[in-house]
Image 1 (cartoon, rainbow, N blue to C red):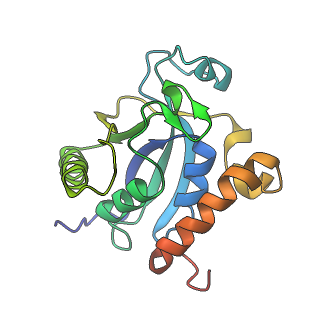
Image 2 (image 1 turned 90 degrees about the vertical axis):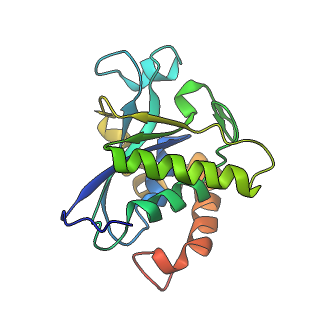
Image 3 (image 1 turned 180 degrees about the vertical axis):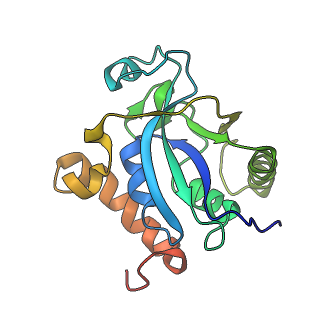
Amino acid sequence: MTISTNTTDTATFGEGCFWCVEAVFLQLDGVISVSSGYSGGSVKSPSYQEVCTGTTGHAEVCQIIYNPKIISYSELLQAFWGSHDPTTLNKQGHDVGTQYRSVIFYHNNEQKLLAEKYRKELDESGSFNNPIVTEISALTDFYKAENYHQDYYNKNGMEPYCQIVIKPKLEKFKTVFKSKLKHKDN
């Protein structure tokens, strides 16, 4: 494994609703910021309403800025694979459509190779009952989502979707990734 000498690096993941992804990755020590947005489609600067139609080709994703001296890309991949079901095509929970697909948008060849290696090892390990359908593609463009989508769980934690979908996912994540959290007392 190569240790990066950069102060920051970037990862881009889609695993269903970006509100969930953002809430999860913000918990990790070494993650500096998480921005919700859209990637993988053909429409330039799409709106949330456009992406929700499922016709833009974009997925809801989060762009994660992290300190590779504190958390590695491999550790982010572990969190990615461990925080959603990578075996369901275009679906996570009740969120259905291509915009909710499981996807890794890599920023360089090292990220691509690590993502492919991890996916292959997981598939061969039998960790999941079904084959992994996660797409691994080069990042072309990232379009930041509207401001009201940013830091959604922290600002709207009492909303029904947050309580019913995000909170249980977050609690499970905190239990599994306890040693990697920003606050060890969680």
